[in-house]
Length: 278
Image (tube, rainbow, N blue to C red):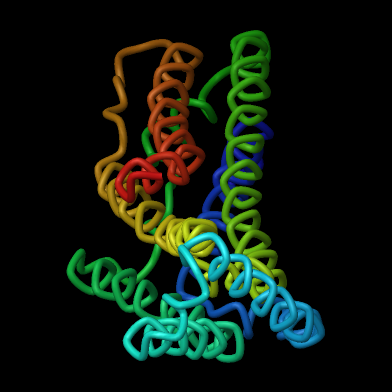
């Protein structure tokens, strides 16, 4: 590594970005049970199991409430076809609550398959590293003390932007995992609403919302693939420009591409919800 402070600072900043982007890529291919060693997942499973009894009790309540609201009179309930329909609804709702965790993991695994297919199709096995061009390093090292003063200011401002963006993107992906955990933990209660016809829309919205959170990973992967293509073709360096202008232009274009990536990741939830009509 160069002994020049500006070069070292820029390289360290880009290393921070590359490290966070690589972590994002890894997290998108990780299951909730493997995240942070699986300790959080075990706690979520315990919460989900403890809420199943409440979910089954609510299931009976929603079922009876639905029967009262949808049946015109007691004679209608006695009709074999109507009674069979109610029995099937109750049985399906009970199965959804009892095996809700398996249902949610099936949805997650399907979407993880979509994410893996996107990665394989793109031909990119990991996040492309963003590096500092050699000609820029040479130009910075050739600067004298007074010429380096504006470079310090440009470097500090640019590094601050890159560091903040790197933490925003990793926190967004961490937030996706937190939402998956929360959906999984509370699942038995909203899933119990499938027992009643008037309340079944709550259960449908819950399943769609969970699928949307899982599908955010696909949008984030596509955004990372596009950014990796930009990183593979970095901004052109004007060798005739002053070192400060050269660094400012390079960092400006780099930060703009990073802003587009982080912005897309931040609105991935909204994009998926629009796709699913939520």
